[in-house]
Image (cartoon, rainbow over all chains, first blue to last red; front, side, top):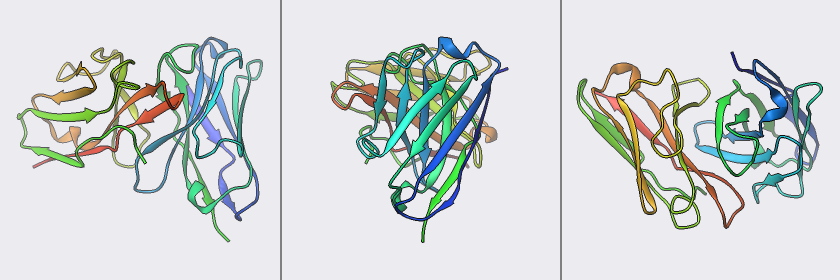
Amino acid sequence: EVQLAESGGGLVQPGRSLRLSCAASGFTFDDYAMHWVRQAPGKGLEWVSGISWNSGSIGYADSVKGRFTISRNNAKKSLYLQMNSLRPEDTAFYYCAKGATGSVAAAGPDYWGQGTLVTVSS
Amino acid sequence: QSVLTQPPSASGTPGQRVTISCSGSTSNIGTNYLYWYQQLPGTAPKLLIYRNNQRPSGVPDRFSGSKSGTSASLAISGLRSEDEADYFCASWDDSLSGHVFGTGTKVTVL
């Protein structure tokens, strides 16, 4: 059974940093791309970033480009999102999601974690 | 701001057929696969349809997807109370070099 467990969310002041982690199990982690998708409370879904199976291809939404950095450690079966210069509009549930293939672009997510809430406020 | 447009709401009585549309452009739906996700209240999204019209194992055949040009649709036949949820379409966008989601449609079972 595919399981994705996010951690690292919380309350942070504008301009500060936060690092999210996602622990994966139940599948061959290094065969698949991974994604971060966020959802502001009561709002729709927004793709944040994706990373290919071997970290060779990485993409970001324009809204986070230059501030967020995605990375993965295949040996630890873990996905990360380093979020710098946080803004109030970054407040959202952040979901870790498994890609359906090893490529970021070829397919969207097929399994999602339960999400971790990031609140950016002074 | 979402690139893919969906109606904000749809409704039907138990047993009816409900259809949700998703409108995009040549850089996303017109060129790439379309996915549909179901999000039950208070839970994470779940993949409902992949590659335009394929159902993952475990998804009832009451759910079906189709695509034509730059638009797509999700049909729910034999509507049930447990289908009450938010539904989102998604696709890769070649111009944005990223995945894009629809605005979301809330389905209500009357």
